[in-house]
Image (tube, rainbow, N blue to C red; front, side, top):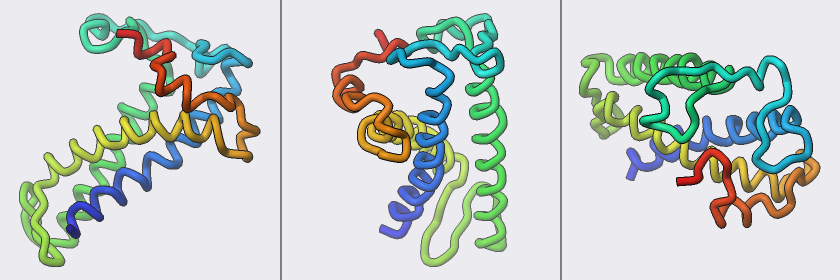
Length: 153
């Protein structure tokens, strides 16, 4: 049960601010639902060969590069070091507070959990949060119906 609590805390502590940041970035899309970024920095499309084998688009944006090549790996590395420090031993298997965690598996699960929860929170924040001025009041319903340009398959 402790491991589940630590997992959920890890997912939520990163997914909530990330969901808020993505809604903030929506201001660079104009008033369109599912539009592309219009800002010259955030909207730059960087073509990467072979990405279409894994994604529906053939390019990434600076947001994706910053988030998935910088922030996620950085936080993951810091947490791995933190788990090692808490345990006082081991890098591949750590034990502390009556729990045993295998950091590579645990942190990969946290990354996947963050991607899923953050996407859901993006729709919730767009629909229901007054501090974002209810950008798309029907955002959660549209999300649940699959009206997303980046997830069409």
